[in-house]
Image (cartoon, rainbow, N blue to C red; front, side, top):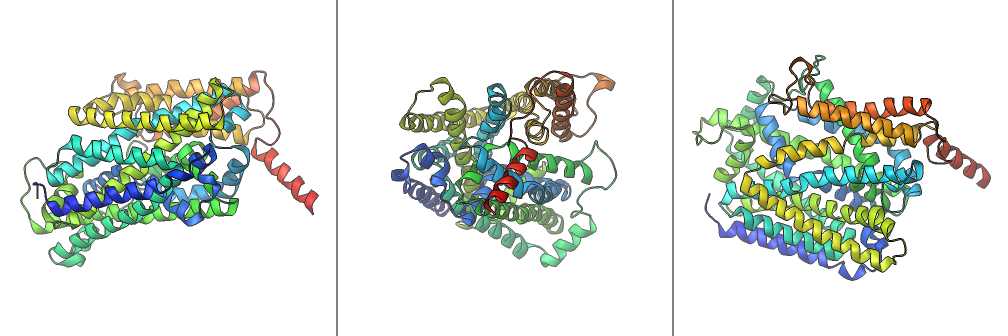
Length: 515
């Protein structure tokens, strides 16, 4: 199966043409920034929910989750459960709040609360954090497709990049959302084919595969011991809790979805649907990894010597056991996962670039000027993303590690900034910046001194906890240090209506006045 198969190629071509056709259908509607950036605020809740789901599931998920389950257990599912906890805590408050206080950019709130310097920091943090993964998403697609078919990686990267940029550039967020809907269904189809193939080919049947995995504790969610240096249940739960707090309070890709709904209730329902769709998909990818492990144990199949890493076994299984045509559908679902994530990021970059930078530097611009600039940003960032993926294909991905490290330092603590802004009336600009600087210093220390081969080895002073806790601690540092500094340093109290307390009081008064 490592040679080019025309049936698989035909499936991929049909998929790519279909995405272009669907995305370009919305070109004529993109007449204002309201149309281009928030789809005229007219997207139904179910479509918005599927779009959230498709955006959160990337090509990294397709490889990382099966690989994690193959090499270990289901600990990777624990962070996913936290999305439900986060939505229960903040959904009915955060979503209506953002729909009321921001127009298009999530980071507009931070300027209203603290000033433009904080808006600049948070928008740059978001941009760096997301751009750092975009090229890797396309690179991973090309690497996997090459292992399945032998197709040239550069050709795969360029083709997927061109199609994604064209429909995102032409159709705006409306095209992104409706292609997300189609891509979401394609992803489900690819998962079904993968699981079906594993079940049919499993020696002894599916029951044998499940029993072997169960006996070897492959379905465990991690140890319940209070071990903060390993991927214990508690470590993964803390990581997931704060990760999704940041996603739903300081991430443009999610907050922009709040704004496209017709009303607050539709926005809450759509976001909840997106989360509920993600959890079973994550579980199914873990199940794929677990059953792949059982298959190779039960079959005794001899593997090539280069298949040694956990994330190599599932792609190898696809390459050697999935029939032509069906493999094309799985590859289409892989493309769908990547393109839905990238197209969403591209449109978000356009919003952030226009609203947080361009409109600030050129205050007398017309809506038409901002629309044109938004499209230019989509084209430029899409091209850069494709070039980064091509570069990674040449360097085999090794050149990315230092960039990931640097961006993780600069993008830390965004939820901490939101928490301090939203929950404290005493927090002010000076105090917040003390907290941000403390977070950056800690994140730099922890990032550079953690792991088996730290960039900076301080011996006994190295960061010893699990790496996923770096972000958790960073958020807490912003809140604790920022609040303490706000109490010590002079500064104004929060403007009315920009904390949860002031906003709820305004809502109460408005309701009382109506009644």
